[in-house]
Image (tube, rainbow, N blue to C red; front, side, top):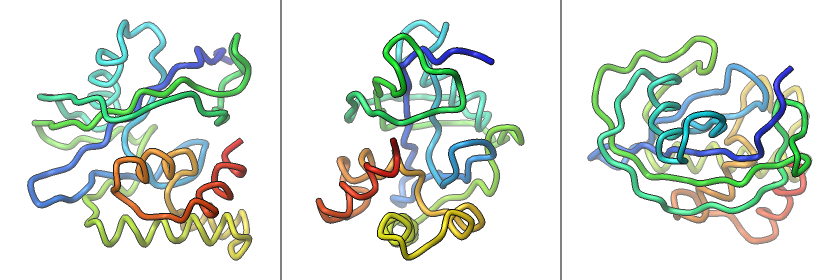
Length: 173
């Protein structure tokens, strides 16, 4: 099993109508999310962002803008790295081109979501964090992946109260 490098990138892709390109994770952790991955041997965070978009969705990045990021104590499926469990995240907003060819190993149910549909998924994650959904119910019909709630709230793609964001953050550790 690989050891975590404690660095990750996330890439929020939107199109001209304001919809978000999202998918359900085919592997741990459960949830609906944009493209993300470890920096590993990709070089820079930008290099990793471009590589992850190509790997997960088959698309080519034509533009990247750094929008947020910081350390998060979120686990991954790798062994803990030198900094323990967690990742130093860099989040980008991206424009892309090409034909969507998702990786079956990485993504399922790839779709463009309206801001309203994205908020509905965020509300499902809040319900899970509040204990109104079981683990099995969330895994069967996931909301937003836990670590992504912070990033999507930070860029105003979703709206969540500070108390609920704290609840979600506690679950993501």
